[in-house]
Length: 138
Image (tube, rainbow, N blue to C red; front, side, top):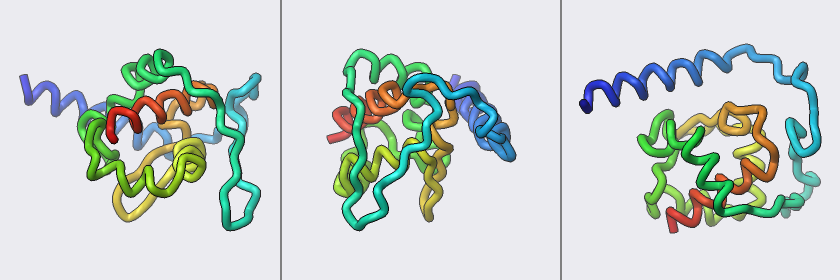
């Protein structure tokens, strides 16, 4: 059974990673609260209008999308529930963390595509999933 799980994760990670290479997201139609680039004001203190988190929605989105990487640590993703892995990220502040999720992240440890690879997620859906993961990892 573990071989099947590992194979599934490997296949899914390949689809996520290689499927997003060269994707032009500028052609995606913008809707209310969707596909809008989030940026900071450019000063040293990041200021972002954070959406309202919905705990039930956050868990739903996590179980639909985020679990693929955050249950296994795929592509360097911090595992759900790992206080040690999440603490440095949480310490950077919610605004910085939200910007990383919305715009994508590539660092020395880990890669995350914008909006976790699902450009159809609204800002509130993304933020709710982020808050859900943080609350489960404190």
